[in-house]
Length: 216
Image 1 (tube, rainbow, N blue to C red):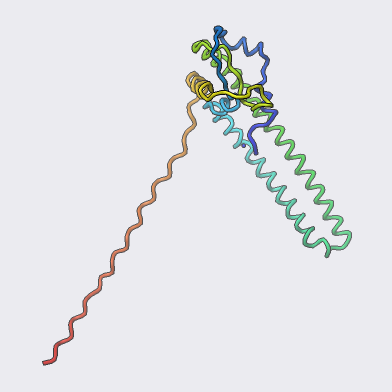
Image 2 (tube, helix red, strand yellow; image 1 turned 60 degrees about the vertical axis):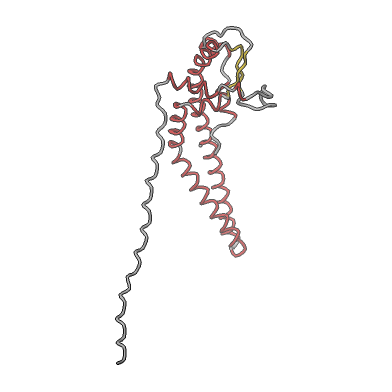
């Protein structure tokens, strides 16, 4: 799922602070600080893995359609490159117009598909973020954390400059989210059956020839 996320997806993480605070239990004051990579956390949840995988499958026919348009465009361009000098003006002009029209079709279809994909990615992300708020708040309260920062975007795009791995709470929050979720872990692909060992060829049995009779 092209990159799965985009700046548009990140907008799903920027929920109103007041709404997030209402959803999460108030944490006690403290000096301990933690960080969470929210984008990673959303995708790593059982729910996120299930929903983003389903979305990728949903858009597979569209990817196939776009590839077909792209292949047609490539064929026409190749024809122009290899045969352009041999074509008369009218035929060459007609081919150029077809290429331009096909390019516009591909660009428009790609932009529409990307916009639709991003919108549906955002819907999934927002749904999970809303339910993750109380989980984060409870974790902060239970562990006496005074602050949790989002480490999704690296500095200078984000506020976090550096943090020790020991304060990364991403996995802990994902585990806590999955524990209260009714979504089971995604099924692991079945392991391929081991191939039978090659049977060693049996040695050829050579029948000994009878010894020649000794002369008297």
